[in-house]
Length: 411
Image (cartoon, rainbow, N blue to C red):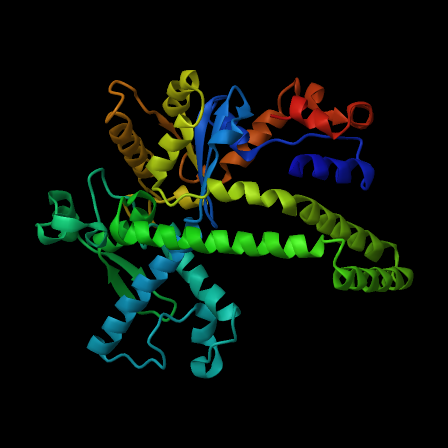
């Protein structure tokens, strides 16, 4: 429905000669040379797992989680603040604050922080840089579990050998904008990655809280959209009429360029209002499961004869998936980008072999430098095909078949 409404706006209001819509999950499959697979896209605001079969998305298997690069960045920032506060008290550093200052605040007169949300965004951007260079976050080997994720009797037992190995490993050094250097333990780095892989404890609780907040936000948006669309509400009608009159007066005073901008904004409002009634269907797709469980659940929601192919061609992409085991070397640029795909493969096989021994999971993923733009790479491959001209939806086809043609020509 969203695609159909968008096609109506593109053809009827913008008068384009032809168009084509491609799903990001399908394009991600093309980027690794596949037409079938389960695509795990770890983005900034969340994670989406989408099964793709023969170039078409199986919508019944789509799962979403609000855990993504943003929440991992927040966890990295918490670690940096705690380490900085400890070092400040131990080394008696002269700093007016007990948290990591962003670059702008360090250079500001009196080191005064700016107002929100600029200050928070600047601090989160600092955490993002720390995470992306491999110092603030990492993915541990299969079998690792953070101490905060242990439950029951496991809390009272000795940590696993893998945890002890990382606990005694050399720390990663990171230089803050003010020149202070802090040492980040390997276990702190890997605890960030456990937000995606942790099976219980604090990681599971964080995911559940994030899902609850996301559902509440979605319910509020649907409720507000429904109130605006209620034709029986006299107050809403009166407000809409006043806004329409004000918009017409503004249009009369503005030039052609400003009119085009307002037309685009009005088209966007129409699209959002048209899709509001259908947003409620996505509430059931939110999940607080770990990433390996999401991939297995997504494949198992599809037909039985599709499951082996979907699990055998898992695609990992997204900027949030650009985490490695080792720290990025500034001299050589070496980073173990295969750490996350390998951990994901082992976790998925452990889940599947509990009831279906013999199945194999293969995780395909571009290099760590291209993983964030995987869908764009697939779209460029699709657009460079010699037969792509036959895939366009032309204005004549739209006028003959209507917006429903998108179901036939766009996967």
